[in-house]
Image (cartoon, rainbow, N blue to C red; front, side, top):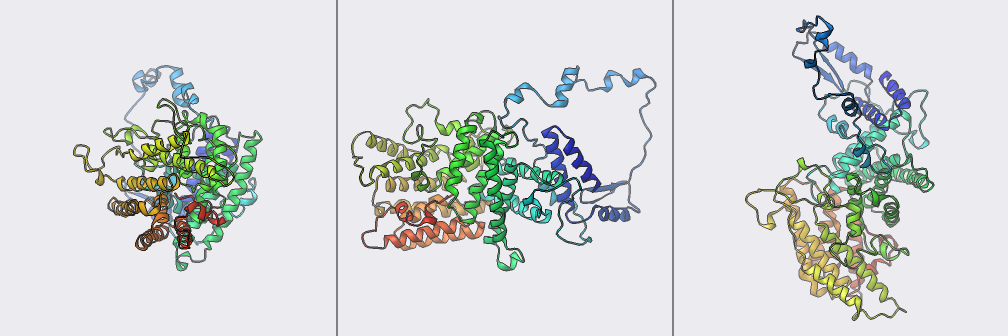
Length: 610
């Protein structure tokens, strides 16, 4: 308790954001490791165990260690001041005061130039995941102390925010553990070779927030919103994946709704502060993480009615504050990649209903006029990889930030996005009362150009996981089947939504999508990859499947995906498919576009098929 109070005082007196960040991490580490056990009881037990301890033994309990110290005679005798200041005893690398100051402060003008506008200091990442990484492997406190749900240690000088008064560390640890050890693996379709954005950006921010709450009773609105959103994500996941017996006394769905509402309130206040120029307390990446996590809540809970609003808010924030930061921060590029992925796999009605132009209107809507043009996509995520060279195979060609995270060439996702925009444009031209001939003129040329680029697209695997010297056939390279499922789904998507081809002609590709999805599941089992499936290709295949056996296969795949991950989006996608199948069974509706069918159901108008 004394250590917590001293650290709290240091945090209040600290003028350095980096120092405050470190202190918050240290405080969160201490509380997480000790759990519900009083420090005094842990130390008393260690004292009782020290009798007879040998020189080569160490006892540990939680973060506390005891060992036998032996006083050794000094082997170095300094007779004079000259001996003490002998140059050979000093670090020869620090040759002058300027170098010493640079080494101490860790600062250089170049580093400052690389920092985003909202980030006066980058988050220190040396111990970014130490707290939760090591809890399972450290000596745990003895369970002899009474087990009870307790609040974070507090001092008379600290008061908590109203929405944090019931904040308890046991529940926080349970939800954060589930998020980090279970949910994070579901956010990408294949295991990320290096650390994913959730491991390298989200988790450190969450731990910092927990420490700040423990020490000061609050944190910035954006950071607390992210923490609450993560609590909601974990709770909703457990409500879907746990049986009533496993859930015990916890009503996970109610907990999820509680923290969803709190996250929303904090986020609104954060955006209000940003829009009114009070941006010193609200950092760009914190706001972006909070908004992206609100979309994730929609995906996990299956309640997607607000997903389009959050995506538009993200788009607006990126427009105003994010584009100029891309070249300055790898973190920003990773967060922008998450947005692009969610944006592309979101059912298109959220695009059709917008009245304002979006950030892709000029560069990605139809075609890029020159290969030398820098598209909006590239301006949002840049070209360089965010991961260190030491984590990559030198024989592997460099991949974009997007592909590092999602294992799919961004060129394929660009084609999906361009297909969506062209489909929306054609759909508007076919609106009653508006007469346009799409069989002639510039639009026809744009359709042909996009069709040509889709049909000639080829997957070029960036590397070979099995052997750098004996390349395997393409079908044996790990993400091959996933990429092929996405590509075949794009073909079906284009010919149904742009060319309006009868679904009967596309059944060969529907079968291929399902086959590739099933093969990819087998590959993931072989590689022990716990990543979740991507819903979009399965949904596209299901919408156009005519054979009852194919429909049954995709239904089983969606149910299995939802059950194994606790992500209700898969179940909602299946409900949407059933609406499409039911409508197409009606006379004269056999070829009805699925997006128009779903437009009649308010709860299914927006589907984030991630």
